[in-house]
Image (cartoon, rainbow, N blue to C red):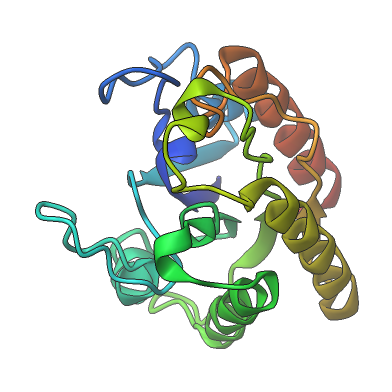
Length: 212
């Protein structure tokens, strides 16, 4: 059985757009749909956390532990062994409060990739294969985004970032999934139910074809 770790933020957790922390259920969120698509020869492990970043520390009360890099090794050790890791992070780093450029965020992802490529399973010394799942683009035209500047400029920056992701992955021979077309819901940040379905099918196709 191949084991697939989905490491991401609220769009991996399954946050329902426009709600107060409601979650898509097991028949709706992409991680559970991916399990159904892949079938019994795979085990899909959910590791989505709301507000998770690549490296930034969220200063808001109750948001401790959002720096994804500090939990990466404990997570890999917890679920050892992992055959495939799907990394879908970067949206929260687009927030103005963190003041990151697209290149800054790419550099952060590069550190993740370096770490994962050097990581060895405690069981058999294997290394997980990596899939970078590109980010859905933030829709700044929604009321949620318009009434605050939290994600001001995030649409263009996210589009630039996905281009950088794609080129970087090609140069490093890493699987990349383009998600520029995935629709977000009423808040402009979180995926619609239909986008969860589309993402699951897209990832399943890639994993079934490419992962050895």
